[in-house]
Length: 309
Image (cartoon, rainbow, N blue to C red; front, side, top):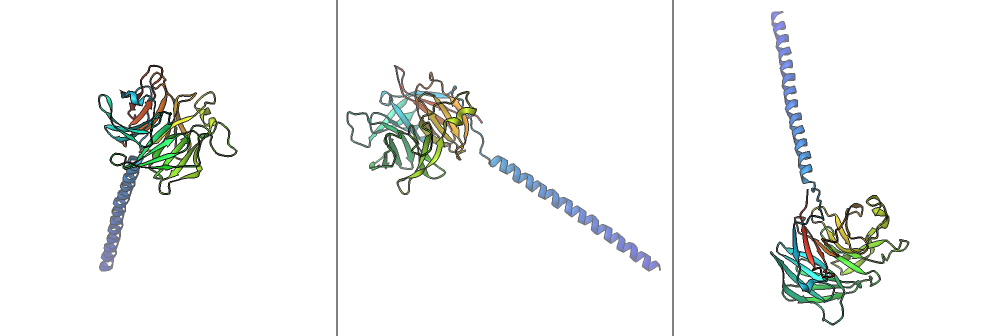
């Protein structure tokens, strides 16, 4: 009987020890899982693109542009010291060095120069190829623009009635975006509606369905009245992929859309800083550059805006 009693006690102790070890193991495993989950959540939060805000009343730097760029109509970021600019009057690419002063380092003609105004409205860079946009819906594709330029003229279904004014590279689709200042080319849309079209770089053709529509009613939640919005420039943010669009006619402002086409924010532009905002581009880190034509004795300028996060 003594043997049996001792045996039962040993079995009971062994069972309790097993349950205790099982509990310890579960605790540490669950703690590890929790830590891993917390780590994943923390990493996801850090991986989420930060919000970028720009105060257009406080530029971090201002450059007075050379007289050649009095009617600057667009620019693209080249590197931390250079932009590639375009202006209304002549079919010329201007490589501009941004130091203490802005200096034109190089001029690259891409079309025969005549005495008439050309109406080149914007420029975009895709690696070693520059694209210049004519207001009549025509693109000039300039390969090897820095060394041995080879130019191809590309017609699109867009025309002078659309008044194509904005051009940029889209790092999401790897295509170009073209903003129309006037006619939207979309049936059953109000006259005030504006279109953004996508240009397929592989096929060198315009995708006929609009990439995005800008409707006057979108601005009601940001202003007491419906504002006139006429796109003059466009750029895709390199980090958030939001779409930034300038308007200079009637309302001088910058509108920010999500990549899906939802208006996220709207900011008026002080004409004392930017008399006629015509160009917009970003550096890879999200630094914003906006240019303005010179008018009424005021010189053309390029302003830099650092992002507030």
